[in-house]
Amino acid sequence: MKINDLEMKVSIGYKEIDGPWGGGNNFRINLSKYLIEKGISVTNNLRDRNIDIIILTEPRLSSFSSSYTYREIYYYKKLVNPNVMVIHRINECDERKNTNYMNNLLKRANIVSDHTVFVSQWLKKIHTNNDIGLDSSSVILSGADNTIFNNIEKIRWNKREKLKIVTHHWGNDWNKGFKIYRELDDLINEQENFEFTYIGNLPENFKFKNSNYLKPLSGLDLSNELKSHHLYLTASLNEPSGNHHIEAAQCGLPLMFINSGGIVEYCIDYGLMFEDYNFNEKLSYMIENYDKFFDKVQNYSLSSESTNKQFLDLFYKLINEKTKKTINFVNFRIQLFQIVLFYYKVLKFIYIKINAKT
Image 1 (tube, one colour):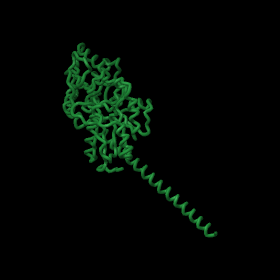
Image 2: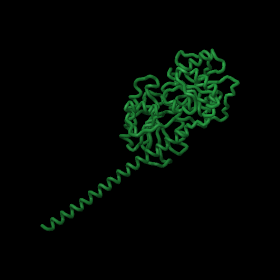
Image 3: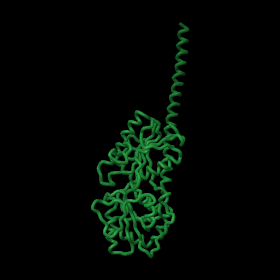
Image 4: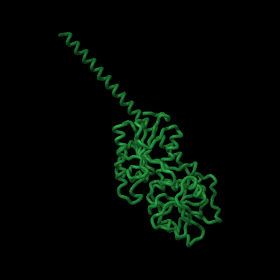
C-alpha cells in the first residue's frame, strides 16, 4: 500500500462521456482532472493489479456509464488485490424517481465498501434508515468546475428590463420540477415583468406555451447562457444533490429552490426557499429583494476544487489507516513470536535441567 502521490493509482467506475450529461459524469471528469494534475494515475477499469483506491459510482450493470459493478470489485478484492480500498459514492435513491429497487441495490453494493460517501445528509439519512450498513462514512457535497462556472463578468439585474429566470436539467423525469415549471409558464401570460428559459430534456409530450426552450448545453456554452439570466429556479423533488443549482450559483445567480431533498443543503444560504403551495408569493418576495440575494450568492462556497480536495484527503486517510493496521498486525505477530520463543527457551532450559538430574 502506497501513500506517495506519484505512486497512487485510482480507478473511478464511470465512463467519461463528452457533451451534456448528468452530475455523475461531471464528478468523474472533475475528479480525474484534479488527480492527474496531482500526478496520480487514474483509470476506469480493474485491469491493473496494483490499484490503491476504487471508487464505485454506478452499481447498475445496465447503465451506459458504468465501468464495472460491485460484483467485479468483490472478485478483484478477493482474488487480485486484497489491499485495495473501496469508496462507494452514493448519489441516488428510489425517492428521486419513484422507483422501487435502487435503495436495495445500493445496500447490496455497499458490502464491498471500506468507506461510503453520500452527497448530502438527506441522502445519508434515507440509506441509514434502510440499514445500509455503515462502518465508515462521510458526506462530501458536490461542486462544479470553477474555471467554467464562475461569476466573472456577471452583472446584476438592473430592474428596468424583464427578470430573466432560468433552469436546466439533463434528466426528463417529472420529479425534476415540471409542476412548478408549468405553473411559471402559465404565470407569464398574466405578468409581464419576467420571462423563463428551460435548458435540457423534457418529459414526453410536454411543451411550454410561453417560455423559451433550449436543448441541453454543457461547459462554457451552458455557463455563458446561465450568466445571461438573472435568477435561477430549481423545483426538483427528492434530489440527492443535483449539479444544476451548483453551476448556477457559481455563475452568480441567486437561487429559488424548493424545500425538498438534498438541494436545501446546497442552496440554503444563497437564495430563497419555497414550498409547492407558495411559489408565487416567494417569487414576488425575490423580485422585491433581489439585490440582497444577489450579493449573498457571489460568495458561494462550493466548487469541484473543494470536493476533489476532500476526496484526496479521504484517500490519504484510508491508505494511512490501512498501512497502520498492517504495521500493527505485523508488530503483533513479531511480539507473539518473541513471546513464543521466550517460553520455548524456558521450557527447553527446564527440560535440559530435568534430564541432567536423571
